[in-house]
Amino acid sequence: MICQICKREMPFKKRDGTHYFEKKEMLARKFLPKEDEANFLALCPVCAAKYKEFVNDDVMGDLWEAVVSADSCEIPISLGDENTGICFVETHLCDLKTILECES
Image 1 (cartoon, rainbow, N blue to C red):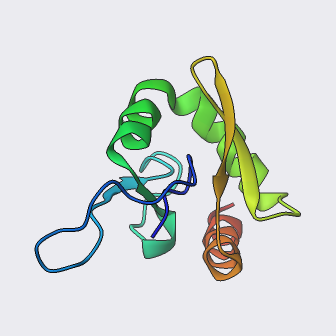
Image 2: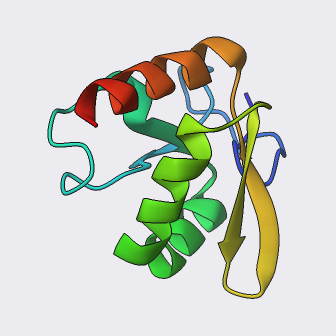
């Protein structure tokens, strides 16, 4: 299992053999009032902390637009001075696009 931002393998496996990761909502309730599985990202602890620190309402508005208009499975994002992207598998991105289009 890899982090959707740094694209590295999650840092360790738990005692049960599954990877440890942090689940972060991509968009706050202000942007997506209904909780939906597709709105969550699987991030390593470092990327989860960067996301929490650098992604505010202004960035989330841009993320919304980027997801809806995406033509690839990577959505660009800036985390402080670092320009990177959020990588999705196709079904995850399609599900997220669908729920965002229903909200608009």
